[in-house]
Image (tube, rainbow, N blue to C red; front, side):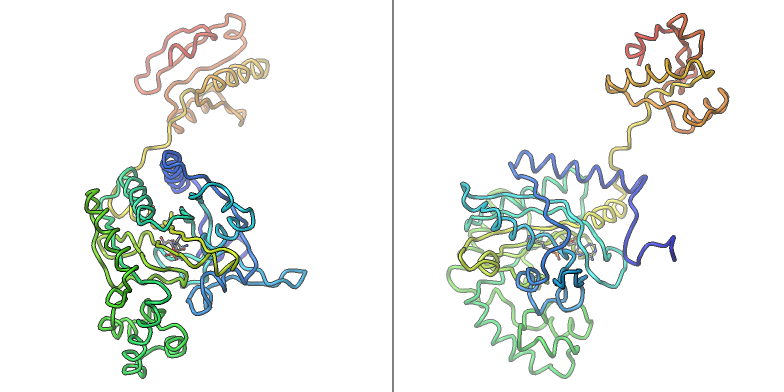
Length: 413
Ligand code: HAM
């Protein structure tokens, strides 16, 4: 038990860690050119933030949150997603008072007590962007464009954009009535949770994962049929812009998203099997719901890093390999240690990846090790090399050796 990690969690090291680093580097690089600034919010927040923000009737709040009382009797929750915390920080730090829009990105862990399976963990990681302050569908276009570039740079081919509109509060009222009357006809076959939330928030039944509910939902009324003029115009303008910009998309009226804050546009990138890789949408009421003094529109997305890694593997995409060690500097004899290490330090300061002996191995074992770590070159530094200021440098691929002055090593490499 003591050497076992909790179910649904993962250790990051070696190949996986390298992949994650590259994914994060690509995300950061793209956010930089989109002028999106990084934000880091706490791993835990007051529980009420998620209850209010994500929504009382969502699976996330009802079943999946890691909530506990701290020693001061406050109810605290490990963040199940990144949006609510980012919006809280936007309000608390008066970012709305700066010239708008505010564009923020985060790379965060998130915690959900889910049934662990492929692509569903209890601690997962998301690259997310929140774009606050704009009503324009061009804000959605900005995020979708960014995502397309991100996906392209990763080398993924199978991710497709699906969009839908779930309307605003006003359209939702009319839609909810229609949905409720449909659900009532099938109430007996709904799962217990859906029976309960059907009257409180019927939209949540649409994304229930229970197969019997999914079957019923197939023929349920769709939100797009109930959009008011403003929401319809918004959705149409978005589609027009996407077409004008040659951005491929499909309308999927089945997408409603699992969190309560969404309004108008919702979108997902799904793989060839229809599995969601990334989800997002507009949330024009969330700021107001968290702090009623403000009414600020917003749109954002979250992309699961573990799901990216799974998808890269499924599609057979290789990310750039970890760079090899440029030079292994072996040490011969105690008296050469400091001189050898001085050289290690100097070459590292010039940007080379240099490794040396920390295990007091024999010269033969050191060479074996240099081979094992795939060092491109190796050399041995002993008292003679230090006295003559020269050493033999060996190309580990060809086996060729050449004598080099210790202050000219960089030139050979
Ligand atoms: P979400 O759809 O709940 O949305 O999660 C976003 C992404 O996180 C998913 O598409 C998936 O890639 C990944 N993800 C979610 N849950 C898990 C899990 N248990 N294990 C592994 N990966 C997971 C949100 O969280 C919203 N905050 C996105 C957003 C930002 N909407 C607007 N702004």
